[in-house]
Image (cartoon, rainbow, N blue to C red; front, side, top):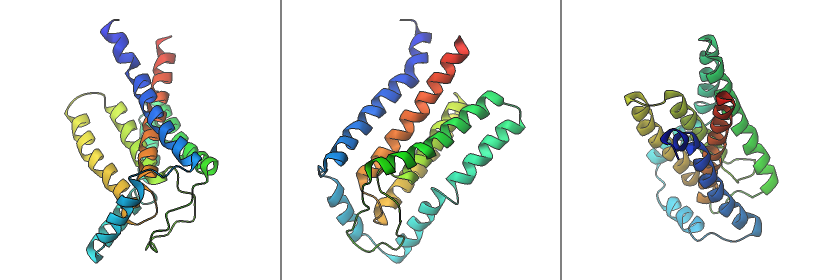
Length: 207
């Protein structure tokens, strides 16, 4: 297989691996199988609470959705369209909006209740699986990495973005509104979706 062919298939391979990870978590959730790390990590997170940590993780929870990721996603698509980078704008819009819609559909499909380990300081009214914050932040990072291609800018965004995504995911566990498996599933679903969109659009462009 030619190197160019291998590179072209990388998004599809990544999508497959992430989809497999999501499927394993989803089967356990649907079957009511308790994952061995969910409750221990939640109980550990409960013991870490302190006023300054509360404020820190409340910030990352807000930045990971309504006050950060969502407006950043909209601005990214608008900026690409303003620059007349239509293909990239279309990719970003489909990947980011599709990720949000997919998350809502999956929540309704699995109907997993939120953890009830302790009264959260930031309760959520919706279903738990998969985490929308984890999925949205990972989708935005994945889109940026695809758009940036190669070079130092991509490496910088990868490093900073990975830290941000992990902190957003950790905030959901710390605040007691998600099981760790919700966060892992959100990351896996986002990577699978963005990689699949990237592969399908690149396949169309090659024809």
